[in-house]
Image (cartoon, rainbow, N blue to C red; front, top):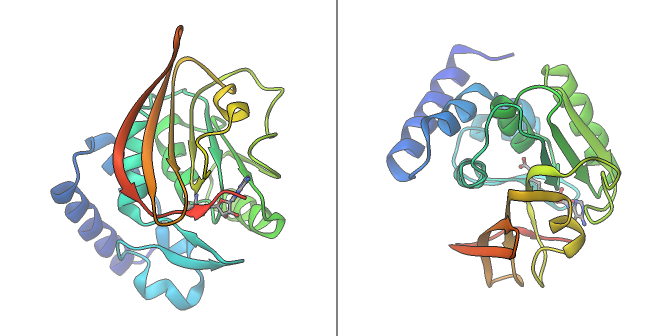
Length: 210
Ligand code: SAH
């Protein structure tokens, strides 16, 4: 259920993100549309609209809203773009991206089968048409046409694996936290004819990619 209190808390969160971040209104509208309280365990419901990560079990977390906003914004998405997410977790970020690209355009993979299954059910119940698969991001959706964009919500220590980069078309974008715990950077890669262009977007903290 989305109560008036949830709606008010979500609006306050969006107002604070608007003040603190340089992100588009389209990204903020997507955050404003997704009921984050439906993605957190019951015992954290009262903190669902705090701008912080929260535990979701299996030693994993739901990302902080500002990180979801920054990554989503850097992907530079349009309606109809096909997007690849590595690390579904509870499915929150996938729902935010689905608000922008529309139904059937988000493909997400999660290593922990129980999380993948719970996220699939939750997204379905909330009306999000997102494809969720259990498995390793390095192998998932290899038979699909190249994606317009990809992002990781777990951090590979040695840079984005080639097998993930190869899933994205020329001109596409990849946003990921990369590096060892304690020294991760958020990077945006743009796939060019002549190779990858890499931009650094500052220090971040994510769970490691397994
Ligand atoms: N997208 C989530 C955040 C998930 S946390 C949100 O909306 O808040 C990162 C997730 O990446 C964890 O659930 C973890 O299990 C998963 N993960 C780690 N290594 C992975 C891999 N190699 N392939 C797929 N998922 C992986």
